[in-house]
Length: 305
Image (tube, rainbow, N blue to C red):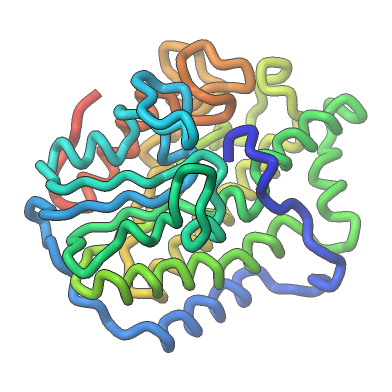
């Protein structure tokens, strides 16, 4: 995500007639049939070895203190907060801004293939990936550009639906097998690890209201983009279930703190951030909220903000 135009946007027209939930359900069933049940190590106790995989929502671009310029990685991102609470040792954060599922197996600048950090002694793995495969950075830019054509309408939704089927829904469905492949490889490399798939936080008002011009989308595209993110999170939840991983909901705990809220209340910065963070990304409070969600799933309580 971030201004990461490396993701894919709309797919070709041959997705006409695809039923989104059926595709996702099928992906989950296929994944379940291909992955053996993993022994979830780590339980609710401290993780001996924790590896964090992910994109810019994990790495925390521009949040102080930046510790890796190549990946725009912060030492106050949610993996760092989780690792501190767990007393994880060793802790390997290889998340990188701009990462797609491809970068789980492929180097990204000075950042090696992320999955290379996972080994047989790994006890806990968090994975937050898929947003760039769907092309969120490009989607945001496209919707902002189209808003001027029909500020009170839904020009972005119409743009992605010109084929008669919503192309973003199709792209999300086609991303599911890639995420499943990542999780299968995590289980293969770390057969005893507890594997958590971390969803994406609430970016736009959950009630569908808008806040142009600070977030420059057409009125009708706010609920469309909200629903698109929910579809992405649903896909991640289903794939996690089908690959013997656990899903961490970060959307629900961040409702009411989206990029349309006042600076004191928001945990996601708008396209012109007021706090240190990349546009349309979590600030330090948002990273802490995601850390809380992960720790809650691990049975460790709240990190605190």
